[in-house]
Image 1 (cartoon, rainbow, N blue to C red):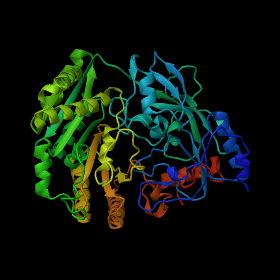
Image 2: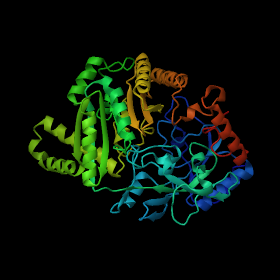
Image 3: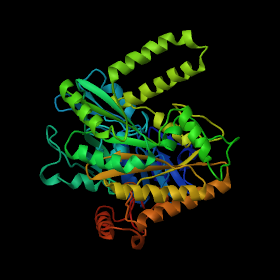
Image 4: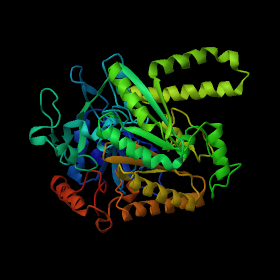
Amino acid sequence: MLLDKLDSLKLSDKGSNHENYKNSGLVGHIRDIKGIYIPKTTDELKKIIQTCHLINQPFYAISTGKNWGYGKSVPVMDDNIIIDLSQLNEIYHYDSDLGVVEIGPGVTQGQLANYLKGTPWMLDCTGAGPATSIVGNVLERGFGHGSRGYRSQHFTITEYIQANGKTKSLDTASRYIGRNGHSAGLTEVFTQNNLAVITKIRFELTMRQELSLRCIVRLKESESIGTYIDIMRQLKSENTLDCLAHIGNNYRVLSMITQFDFSKWNPSHGVPIHDLYTLEMQNHITPWTAAFVVSGESKVAKAKANRIKQALSDIGDVKILSLQKLNRLNWFLHGLKPLFNYSSRLTKFQKNLTKFTQAMLMLEGNPSPMALKGCYWRNQSQSFDNSNDPIDSDCGFYWIAPALPMLSNEINACMQKSEQLFQKFGFEFGVTLTSISAHMCQAIISLYYDVKCDKEKQRAKELITQLRQCFKDNNWQCYRRSIDEMPFDLSKESNRDALALKHKIKIMLDPNNLINPGRYQIK
């Protein structure tokens, strides 16, 4: 057999449990896998790739395999081998002057956050939790919360391996100076693509600030979201706001607090509107809630916070909280916990404050898995656990992510059309809107379904199909795509010239289509 050549490489680790790699979390997307290889060194990885090139064996390289909501670690096509890069988790270099690290694809958010404790620098975290790969997220153009949150703009590639097993680099400077010279702009070509296997990147960190404030905005009316977007566009344009501010609607917040009550509600129709209002009142939830960081030198941070509060106070309740004060209050109430155990209301308040404090600490370079709790919304068999993989825990969910202009009319139109489709199929419409820049708002729409119910799975599949078509019809391009949409049908995609050009580059660099075939690629 051809794969005998791979098995004869005497690798230090070969995966045996194929099932862990075959569950995509997406309805009906299951692929046959020929083998799993887990190199522990770059030299081992090169040997695998060189052998694949020799025997013409397609392979699917993953960082840590936690591409949740978009297909996890499952290949686009059948008959690939999986190369799991999670053991290539070395932090090669940390530049304390410039605030830059050089890392491998297996380095996780939690690993780097622990490494940076006690330093002047921190990681700009995403909400995906501590076990997720930084390199994998960067190459998918993921984003965090702070001033370095638009991650794909803040890295260079110091090592990649081509389909023939040869090693190359796009950043050979002795000290990091960003994208420059002949390689300027080329780094971006390797994001959301399958041109090479990225083994090292230089990645920019965020400096810890003198004062770190938390801005909590609770909109009074659901219709105010358009006005909120227009105000945020102004605040971003004038550089008052340099973070990536997130705002979630009522169902997005509820999914992080509780789960769908299957004993009370019909899964085919969703939560009745009067029960939704009751849940909002019980949990002090408004139609939209935002939480973001304002930091800097003390006077500057306070001035920015006052400007933000002034701009938003007409449409919502705006609270500015010092992280230090929030920590002290949480510590104080935790110490008093034995004294108010008799009061369920005070106990609930203390627990919610602890969760809120943990969420706010994420904005200070401490990755938290709390955002993943929403994935358990329609899970009948399990509740959220910090250590769980939501897909392995039988959570069914899709994330679909249209990128929109920072304009109220466009965002309102997208939200209305999306919510109508959710109501049509009997699902709860949960969404987060992120102000990436003064020009772009990134929506992350969450579709949660019960994997134990075949009819519900089919409803979810039909809903996601119609959502995708709706966004194409309105030219709302998604910033990130799921593997069950790939490879793309060029005739049905927008920006076809870009896809065709990417295809030509792919043919030149990987003529046998060995690296992650089908991924972000046309048929």
